[in-house]
Length: 56
Picture 1 (cartoon, rainbow, N blue to C red):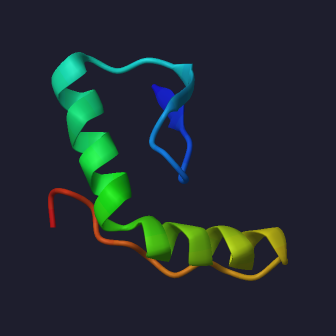
Picture 2 (picture 1 turned 180 degrees about the vertical axis):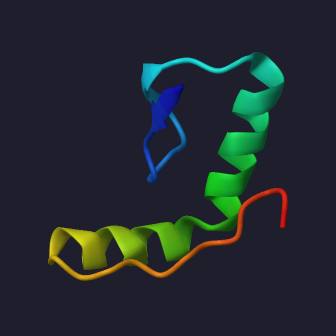
């Protein structure tokens, strides 16, 4: 399990195996705008929109 920064994909806590880490960083880069929009919604007490995972 790991916690990543939306802004630059750095690991804030925890760790993942190297291959999974690379996939998560790529996914963050692809979906950064959606992630930031959802973060803003969540901070303001609103329900975030679903974001497609790598398996979809």
